[in-house]
Length: 277
Image 1 (cartoon, rainbow, N blue to C red):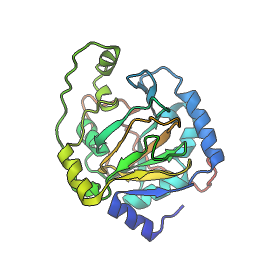
Image 2: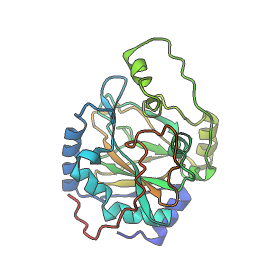
Image 3: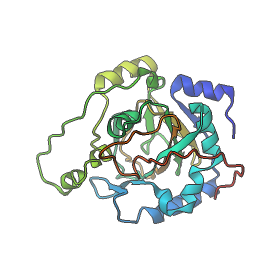
């Protein structure tokens, strides 16, 4: 798949590009079925909500040929290469589960802040492809974005200090590893109200909606968030973060786990065949 000049311009101007129906309903049904199996595994790659529901499941491709093939699809790798401007490798992948009536929020943040601060990623030459596994509407917790906010650079407000007054199971769970605070609903690095207000008043806020099979490509510095899912409809997504091969992670004394920040910097080939499932 090859993006048009106009699509590339849209991405560079806005920090995101929404492509509807990039995957067929039949392909999405296979991915959704596979997700139901994968997230049952009780392991460190599975992250829980405060209510006990699954929030995220990292690196599902490590046990799934289906998700592995999706990551390597030419429909994703080729556009990622065009938007970044060179070859890419897989930095991170995860399933985000936002179940009807219980799916929790994601606060305003920039992805690259985590990858810079916690993994040492040199530059924000990285993007994420989010595949909609359900129809996403204005009610089931769509991703909110501020167009053009990726041009702000990295806004480093420092690590937040959460005041936890009780030793609940979630507090203990959140503190069980050094990296968990970057993955739960109380994010380690968030954007200030002033920063969000500045860019929202300038460019507005948009929501990423579309039918299942839609793919949303978004820049590592884009301001984004999502609200609780109070609707009766699930909103599950599969997110693949592609990083430039010139932007690899440095050697660290105590790096985050491989399933969060991959150190396999081998470039992904552009698949010839378009059938991935």
